[in-house]
Length: 133
Image (cartoon, rainbow, N blue to C red; front, side, top):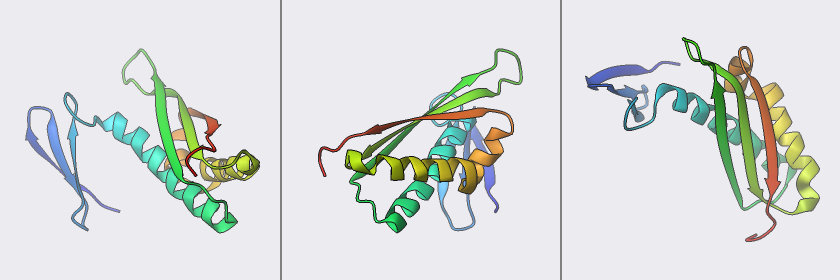
């Protein structure tokens, strides 16, 4: 895996992957580096959950993840604890399977979670919304 990050001006950078995908990093007006870490955790876990639920043949119509971190007061300010809220549109009868998918992601498959867990506790909450299926 490789990225190339180039300073643009001020606190703004562009980061590019070899496949051409590009993201702007900006500590004052865009995604900060730490926000990207949280987004990476949510995206990594989300990919796992979708894949696992599809393999389990669990129907769902939407998945939203909110990742929030509490930081230390001293420098370097690192994440003490991360909380992820999963909101999924599926039937309540699927709760156990959704929980299994989340826990498999956070405990076994998501490499971002594995790296972050070396310094930060990761906890989650699940909200199931059966409407709009």
